[in-house]
Length: 102
Image 1 (tube, rainbow, N blue to C red):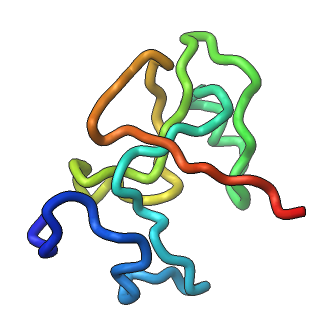
Image 2 (image 1 turned 60 degrees about the vertical axis):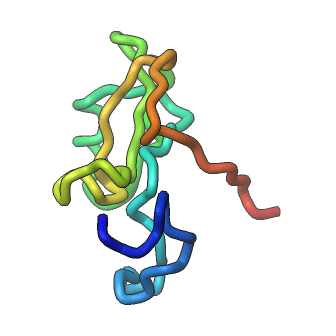
C-alpha cells in the first residue's frame, strides 16, 4: 500500500514481480470480470491449463480473478477465481479490454 502512488500504480511498474516467463501485472489493481460463468467446482477439472469456464451458472454468477489493491496476499494471483452477481459494483472491480491476435 505504501508504494508512492496516490491511487493504483502504473502497468509494468514492478519488474521484480515478473513471472518465470517475464509476464508482468498478473496481479491486478482491481478484480477483473471474466466473460464466462462461475461454478466453483468447474475449475477443478483442468489441472494443467485454464479452462474457459461453463456456459451457464446455477447461481447466475460471473467469475472475477486477479485480486485488487484491497486484497490480501492469498487472493492476489491470476489463478484465484470467485463469483459475483453481474449487477455488483465496487471500487476494486473492473475489466480489461483484450482481443485475440489476428
